[in-house]
Image (tube, rainbow, N blue to C red; front, side, top):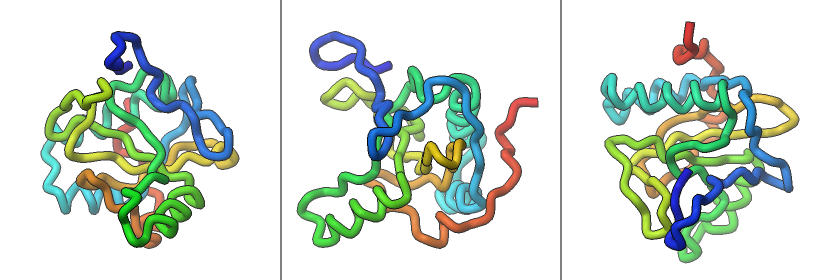
Length: 161
């Protein structure tokens, strides 16, 4: 949990879309093939991949409660972006979030959150009942493509045995 400028602990964005709450107890995680492609594209090494695994373990055991890095909705592109409305609507439609995974390392933001150069992009729709991990992306992020959102689910390689 991050410490804000006022010295108090801050809850890391447990609000979902349309008043749904992100789960604070363990929940299933599904992995898209696009995740492997994006980790390969950015040349993630074993240390970087372990950060992705750490996120999946945390979600499956504790939900979104007390995540280390900043976790937020992806529906707030820069307001000077000419495609602001289109991007915001896309993120809302697919219930997109991004989580700062600490790759290559965490930095403390002015608001006290832990941010990083790379984020894990995922979707959470309460009706579906699982967290859908889509890809990793360099921040400031580019929203996932429709192709990434529709890539096949693969076996969760990060499950603890």
